[in-house]
Every structure is written in structure tokens, then in C-alpha cells.
Image (cartoon, each protein chain N blue to C red):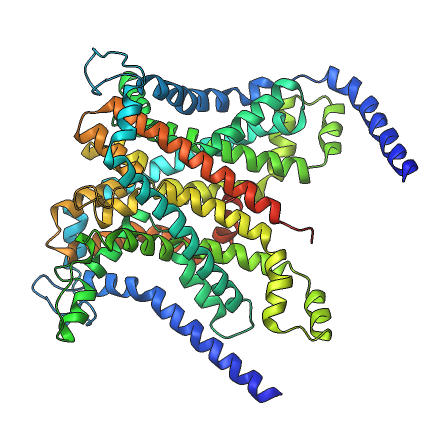
Length: 310
Length: 276
């Protein structure tokens, strides 16, 4: 053991010696990344920092005059019942979509990993909505759920039942948004799971079958642990996508009725453009960035820990 | 043994068929709606009594789709070109020259990927007003490029590190080539697979972008396809047939590209989904 470690150390130091003279002779070539760095600093970092500053003011978004009000906007944010409503909705969009996209995506992938007919076609059709604008996908589903002349109500009427106004019902419309978002992006999860499934060696299953393991136990003890990297990627991208949700809400419900289906991003838009409450909108933006950071990083860390070496 | 196995397969095929049909429902409704003439209030599930193309020509003109499709093409094209040039240029030294400054810059680009750019909507909007670029296609390009550059750099740097042999560059250096000509003549051509992925990612994301466009492109002559469609929907909530026709024309270019280049799309978008 000791000699191996010793040898490794020797190798490492040798590599360092080899590198050192090289490193001192090499320049950073910083001019090659200067355009990219300038753009990102100017259009992302600077606004982000400036947003922290604006969140400490009572600026209305257009006038030259404004006062620094300290953390007043933050305490207002914490007391505002609308904040908790939109945070709750945002979490529902983020976590709800993630749950459904992963369960359905995994089931689809398990199905399409079998050699069955229609495999290619099914995969294409499931994936197709991914490349369509979420705004337009929302309009397409609007034709289905619309109160006046929607496809759903056409069925209900034909069956002699009462028409329903699902998109204006605050009890269900947030779930419909989750549903449409899931429908649209389940293809992404499916593709990532399919790639994960195809990278698992058949030997594991053959050995398990020899030991007489049931299909369920094979899934639980082989497939699932070895899919952990795919699960991590999927959960993190779905959570981030869901927490940022904007377009689908605009096209399906417009955030209504009232603020009932508003997410943090649509609410921020509303505060800024319709209520001229720029300082408060900036505060909302800071809260949103914090929530997205905390949730996505903890999802990343939580699932990374569960990954096993294949 | 063979018989039950075949039965299972038949069952699974049936399940796949049902899933396919379910995923086609919204598209079916979209088509029947778009092709129905104005007075045709029959069920959305029914085929049009008579296929009418009226909605398409009317929507094309009144929603100003020609102009907005052109704007979208221009914005997407220039964004993609800049993402490829600036992204690959930046990734090269960050992948190859591991000086302290370069490590720091690389970490900065990665960290920025986690922040959704629109959480800074208020100050960004103000910045655009201040530099007088409201309602210009240029600002849409710059915003999109800034938003996706970190991802582009991340993908390029990973590819350069893992697949481009240093020996090639060193040989070119021996021949006295400048860094820039080594980059463009030797390295860049080898980056084709990543370049294809970044091209597809930027085409899909920027073509479909609504969040930036709705804030910065409100004027009629600069509207992109999504903004044009959302204002058209606002004016025609009682005439969904028209909106459906407009929606079909808005998504058609991307859908056709996808069906033609399916493998590249799926691979490209999957490599971009590591973002975050």
C-alpha cells in the first residue's frame, strides 16, 4: 500500500516539475476570452449586482428620483401574502413538474428500451414538443382547455355534461400548468434515461437472472442505482426549468384569476410593468435567484451523494 | 416460452401506441382548428367539413408573420454565429492555459450558468433603456449571446480538453504559425461536433425565446414570432381558428428542421442540458 502511494506521489511531483517551466512560459491569451467576458459581465453580472442595489430603493421604474429605504422592500416582501402565494406556485411548478417528468420519463424510457414496433415513431412524437416554443405549446393546449370552444368541453357537451372552465379555476389551473409543462418536456427526461439505460452492461442482468432475481429486484438493485447520474441530471435541469417557468403561464392563464397561478417570474414582470413597483420587483428577483440557487444546489448535492461507481 | 413473450411484446406495442396517440392529441386539435372555416363551430375533434386555407392567409397578413419570422431568423442567425465564434475563442485559452487568471475566469463563467439571467429583469431593462437599445434586434442578439455564452464556453472547453490532441497545435507552433491561425486552421475545424450541438441549442432556444423578446422587442417592426403570436392571441381570443393557423406557421420551420435532423437535434439538446 505504502509503496503505491509513494509511487503516485513521485509521479505527481514529476508531473509538476514537468509542468512548471511550461506554465511560466505560457501566457494567458486573455484577449481570446475578452469579448465573451465583456458581454457576460456587462449583460449579466452588472445587472445582477445593480439589482441588489435597486432592491434597497423605492424606485418606481422610470422617474429619476428615488430613495434608499434599506431593507424595507425585504420586510415588505416577507409580510406580503402574495409573496407566499407565488413562492408556493413556483415550488409547485418546479417540484411538481420534476416529479411527473421523471416518473413518466423513466417509464417511457423503460418501455422504449425494449425492442418493440413503433419505438422510433413513439420517441419522435414524445420528443417533438421539446423544440416548440413553450408559449405556443401553451396556446395549443389552450385550444384543448378553453371554456368557449375548447376540445375538452366539446367532449363534455357531447356526453351531456356541464362545461367546465378549468383554466379560470384557481384550484386546478396551477396543476394544468404543471401538466402542460410535463407534457412538453417529458421527452428530455426520457432521452436522458434512455441513454442511461443503454449504458448499463447486460452482464449485470444476466448474473442477476442466474441468481433468480425477480424483474422488480433487478430494477431496484441494478437499474435504479446505476441510473443515479441520469436521475441527478434530470432532477436538476427539471427543477431549474420549472422554477423559472414563465411562457406557459402567460399563454394558459396569464397568471390569473387574480394572482392565483402567478409564478415568481410572471409576478416580477407584473410588479415592474403593470404596477410600476421596480424596487419591489427587483427584491422579488433577488428572492427568486436565492430560491433557485438553494434548491438546485441542494438537489445536485443530494443526488450526487447517491451515485455509485458503475 | 415463446408465446407469452410475444404476448408481452404485443401488449407493450399497444402501450406505445396509446402513448403516441396521447402525445398527438394537442397537435390533432391544432390541425382541425386551423383548417376550419370561420363559420364552422363543429367540435374540435371533428374533421373540418371543408379544408380551408383562409385562416392561414389571413393570419399571415394580420399577425405580420412574414416580418416577425424574418426578425426571428436574423436574431437567431447572428446570435448563433457569435455564440460559436466568441464561445470557441474563449474556451481555447481557458482549456489549454491553466494560469491562475484563466482558472478564475472559467469558474466565473460556470458560476454565471446557475443564475437565470431574468432574475435581474429590472436592472437589465434599465440598462437597455440607458444605452438606447430598446426595440432593436441588436439588443436581442446581445442578450441571447450573453445568456448562452457560458454554456457555449463550457461545452467547447470540455471538448477541447478531452478530444483535441495538444501535439497538433505544438506541431503547428513549430512551423511558426500564430496562435490565432493555429486556432482557426487546426483547432476550430476539429470542434465540428460541439459546434453542431451549440448551433442546434442556440437555434432552438433563441428561436423560441419569449422572455427576452417580450421585454425588449415590443415595436411592430422588431417583433419576433413569439411576441407576434402573443399579441395576435390577445386580439383573437374569440377566433381560435386564426390563432391556430398562426401557431402552425410559427412552429413549422423548427418542426421541419427537427424531423429532418432528428438525431442531431436530440444529441445536441441533450449535451446542452447539462447546463445547471
